[in-house]
Amino acid sequence: MLDKSVFSFESYKTYLRSSLTGRPRGVRTRLAEAIGCHTGYVSQVLNGSAHLSLEQAVQVNRFLEHAARESHFFLLLVQRERTSLKELRHYFANQIRLALEAELNLKNRLSVTPELKSEDAGIYYSAWYFTAVHLACALPQLKSVTDIADYLHLPADQVAGILNFLESAGLVLRREGRWKVGIPRVHLDNQSPNIRKHHTNWRIRAIEALDQEGPKDLHYSSIIGFPESDRVRVKMILVEAIEKVRALVKASETSETLHCYSLDFFPVSRGTKRTTLER
Image 1 (tube, rainbow, N blue to C red):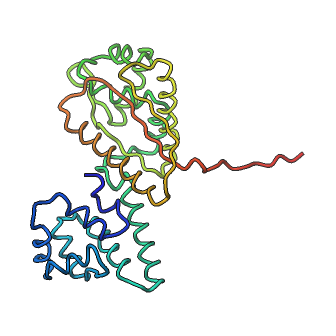
Image 2 (image 1 turned 120 degrees about the vertical axis):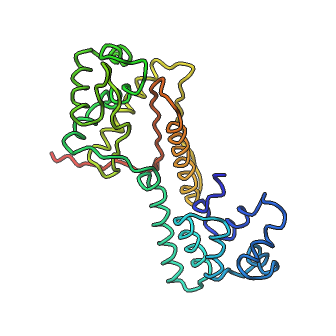
Image 3 (image 1 turned 180 degrees about the vertical axis):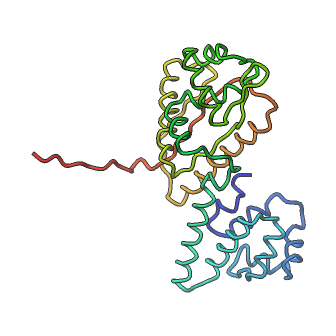
């Protein structure tokens, strides 16, 4: 469940209580055996002032079958709560922040895909239709330039030029009289100079889609208020939703239609730079 991800918790004790809830009876006894202590001590850790030792925390990682990043984060939580020294608490709090930033970076969470050469990337992300034509080649019913042009409502000669570029970049292939996808996904780093253009292209398309909204469409915008401490949890939920969509798409045996989905999450208070006009 989303709310049981260790990255969603600020306290390792709260996380443990949540993780053990709903498990078969006797789980606390098995945990006590795994970390080499009495069941009563586990209760003191979960509900009192006692703390796990680092050695016990390592055993908890093994008991809960944490992956490497989860294990690292859990140990950071334990160390922050164990220490009473202000400087050390500050140090571990900063390490926790860095670990969360890394975990919420989509590049670190999603499977690595190839990157385009800079000159090809500049063209590919210059307009929405390069990506659209690229992925349209994965639709089995679109076999020709005319099919793709009609599907995307673009001029046939424009689509032909786009396909020639995509073929030169290795993104599509011409096989048995039809166009097919060569590389289905390409990676665009958050620091890339093309990232802003890529997001802008598809948000403009989303705005255009509002004028022709159909019953199958979904458009949602909301301004929400919550404690700053919940910001990471909200972002975690959104990132995990992206992962679920990608897993669903990857598991699909075939593509039938193309859809765009965009996601924005940012502080409303973030302003624009003020400029001063000299007269």
